[in-house]
Amino acid sequence: MPMRLPQTPRRLALASLAAVPLLLAPLGAAAQGSDWPARPVTWVNPFAAGSAVDVVARIVAQKVAANTGQGMNVDNRTGASGNIGTDFAARAKADGYTLLLGSPGTMAINPFLFTKLPYDAVKDFTPITQLVSFPQVVVTSPKQSFKTVPELIAAAKAQPDKLAHASSGAGSTSHLVMELIKADAGIKLTHVGYRGGAPAMQAVMAGDVQAGVEGLPSLVGQIKAGAIVPLAVTSLKRSPQLPQVPAMSEFIPGFDATAWIILMAPAGTPPAVVNRIQAEVKKALDDPGVRQQLEAQGASVVGGNPSETQAFHRSEMAKFKRAVEISGAKAE
Image 1 (cartoon, helix red, strand yellow):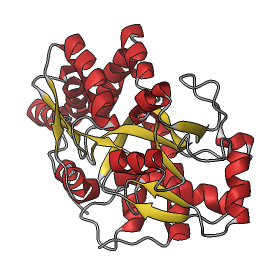
Image 2 (tube, one colour):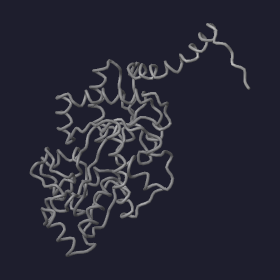
Image 3 (cartoon, rainbow, N blue to C red):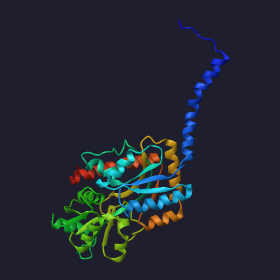
Image 4 (cartoon, rainbow, N blue to C red):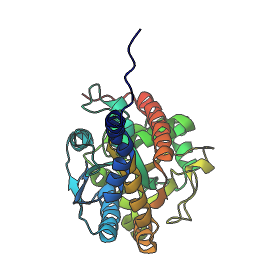
């Protein structure tokens, strides 16, 4: 039978000291969250300066910087369809000072498009909050005979495989959104991929292809100038920026395929830090001036807490997995 030692004052004191780290651990995590940001923060954008992700990120980051007194630096790390910058963020220290600007391409399409990917979109990241959503727009040229979605569908059914649609490249968001439309509308259009959204839209305007899909923030100028004709937005409801343009759901019930930007942290970032970042970003998104700037770009503020954002991300992955399977697109 083991011997029980008497509880002397010294032993009681040592036992109390041994418990101190356990008691302080949660307090330390909370303190770490309240201290964020104690130094400049890097927001990694896997795409080029001037892209929709870049424009939105700089508007929000600038306000967070003003509110916190610390620099919020948008770092454009481009290449490999966004995989280079995303992988860089995945490998960063999980302390809240390197964040990722996730979008459908890197966080919902590439996981199913690429046979090998250097990061795991679920396991390597912790969603913080959804910054914005913005619809894609199905567009055509004033030169085309059809000016509505029903007319496009009728033309495509009358001439199977004779009409073509442009995108910013195979496996891009603009390509896969149209693949969903084609599947749900029961039509065939030949896909023509270009090296980016700008040349794809130039091909639409020139009449080289009959239709295309592109994000609203990239099209505001051409639509206002009448150089391109919007047929529908791909969000579930009409966009406040284009109230006269119908939603695709008015023709395909339940259709919803918007683009979005989610702010993410490397997996393992302390929950207190994640919550602190989410609170600061929410404060920025709630600012009327920030909302006005984002809406002028065709974006709608979303927000949301980490658990809501995680659920949304998982649902979008399922949606774009279907789109990749329908398209048959693959990348090495």
